[in-house]
Image (cartoon, rainbow, N blue to C red):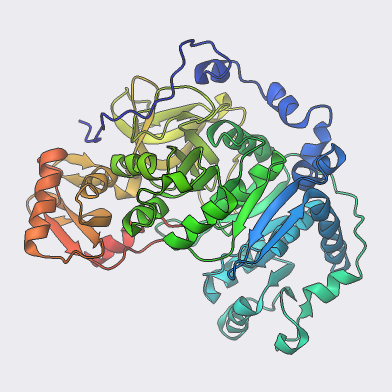
Length: 569
């Protein structure tokens, strides 16, 4: 029995002709990798053998030298820009610097930097030399840094004074034998109390010419780490063969166009930001935007207005925070948004409606993982049915199925684990974790660990992580269903649902609730929320316990850590 709360509101982009060129089904049925490679690289297929060439060098060669690659705004509102020609020149200097440090193709080079112009230059320089770029999120503590540097055998780290102290702590308490080569960005000699080399001093004398190192398409260009609910983070080495898949998402789901002002709010310290705020738009030769300031609703609104953002990518958490702030209410006439995109969690109907009314555009829900990139999307650029709450249809070049515990495909409308059929997915690139930390495949299937159901219209609906599913009185309840319904109460800003032990039912549902400003938790309010879920979702799926909290535990990328809530009981 399904517990999916299927909303009747439709988020549909239909076409009168099922065989029109912008029809999803036409594009999906006629997809070939040969055609995709031609679409991206044309008569220069070797451009795909070096990520710098794919994302910068070829654009300079092909007449886009003066196009702006990056618009950067710092925390004080100061603006800087980089054209593709300037990005080519400065990345050449850093590539020569890396070579002088002994960095070779395949070596890991990391940054621990905020969203700055220098970060982008270093990423492209790393790719240019054939090395592998490794992000270190600026909120990491020393233990997380220590683990990642050890596993990747990182050769060079670029960081700034605000983050350099964490490496001192690592030296004192970590297990790493010695630090990699440290390069300090955005500092003068007086600020350099660590004795590192200074970025500006080092690159000043470097030549800007550097011939890109061509690799095979199975060679990695990104070194990611993905966290689970247990154990250490797993390494994900992203190969150059991922570039076409990144293009498919940016081109057909995000619908990035030549005249767009594109802003992906995600931090490039994590997959969604690195894949689709940097790699994807630059691969298409488009301009991307960095906002160095931390998130708040007013700054976000002002940034959109100042830069005339037309194409936005963000997370449900950010959209909910925008909504609860009141800053965007009735201000859509000041914005320029054409489309919006959401990834990381499921969007609920209320937020989708709010985006339409207050951001003035359609928002599409899209699904992916660090391992795979985005694989299931509501596509802006392709016409297909997708009711609100759905995560859409498979990305072109991907075949998805739903499996039961015995690895058999289940019928539409039944919940099971989402899997990729590898032999039928020519654009799929993931082959396993960097150090074989986990077996992710069963025969021809890549197992996502996420529980979904497929509908007869070919759309997929997210229910939760396999270990997040709540079984109460024999019913399997997806936490997303409960959370989305709780969010419909006017007092609720955020919600998370977990199962807690119960003598009679095995487990019952407990909701952790963050209230909007101006509301106070009470027994009466808790009962209102219970009644709402009881009435709108199902009698067996309402939370029997509600705890009001000031915040939910989250990963740095904004995903709710339900396992921590389960531990708290």
